[in-house]
Length: 86
Image 1 (cartoon, rainbow, N blue to C red):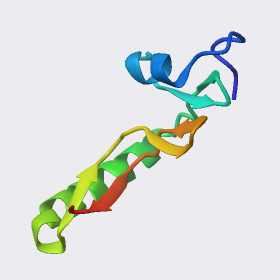
Image 2: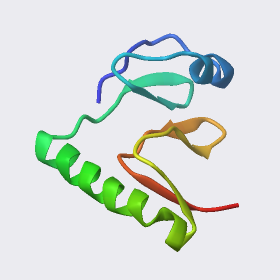
Image 3: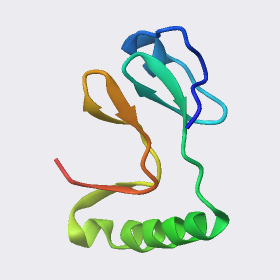
Image 4: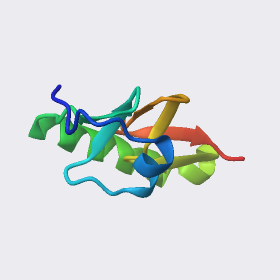
């Protein structure tokens, strides 16, 4: 993955900025997101659709893309995420 910038960016600045295309944050650096192939997007969409249809019954929240904090200086963007309702 290539870096968008060699300049260090704060977590607050990263979270307040919309990147096109999406970018991840690792150790103060903005990193290009690992873009999947079309087949992966279709699969993630189908899985997300099935989970969304079942979300009430399964008591989960479904988001097809969101930033996830893995640590205080590491944010990644997975393809499909499920979370228990809180």
